[in-house]
Image (tube, rainbow, N blue to C red; front, side, top):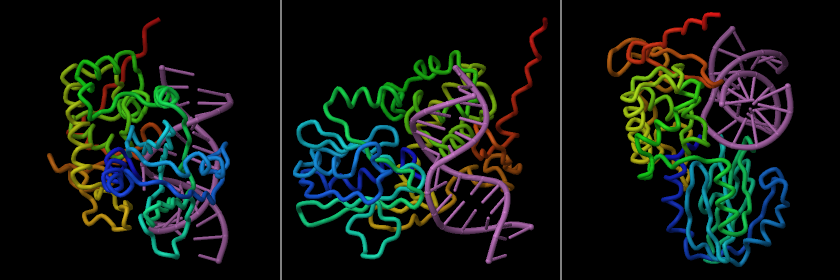
Length: 282
DNA sequence: CGCCCTGTTGGGGA
DNA sequence: ATCCCCAACAGGGC
């Protein structure tokens, strides 16, 4: 459930509670979590080290420990972090114990979440360079940059946004929201977007992600914050998961379709369907 | 009750 | 480059 805004929300809540603290223990009860490393190897590497900073890159949470030891956590679909959790919590996978007496529990029913150990700043750069593109909320995410990314990309705009190697952190929900705000149909090939459309898309990505951060990730109905509190407002989205409901702009019914293998919500009045290109003459 | 489908992600293989 | 399937589980519809 966490996309960039949700991971950022977790980071902001968690950072003041762990930064400057020493990790006293790490117990991994699910071997899948840190495969191919063993839980004991991760524990040995992080134990006794201080958390210098808790950062984020795309949808990854980055624990920067002493001696350039990095623990990189990804929550995938259903991962959650709980600070000082109650005793009986199902699907507990990893327990962090801090030297100040507090603890943190990684909970993940579906077990897609991962924790990886990276040694050295250079290895960290390599790790992200192979998987993540630009940070959409950083100044480098310019109209020119987005135009360069779209050039030569024949995939539908939705697939273009979901590819983490181009833009880091946009997931299925915020992709729908950004495309709606930019009035772009998810099926339109990225390399056939006009310059004004790409400029609008850049702004729409930023606005959509920032709206999610400003809502503390509470827009996703499943989202639990560090203290297990549920988001108060569900359904803050403009079109996502609003099949059949009226478009907030024009009132026509929001349609659901499958694009890039994911459920996709669109107002086909505001986001006109691309014309099928005539097959090349031969 | 059981079967089938869907899902907030990313990696690997075709 | 691009598409499809899969990981493992819960919940909803039929």
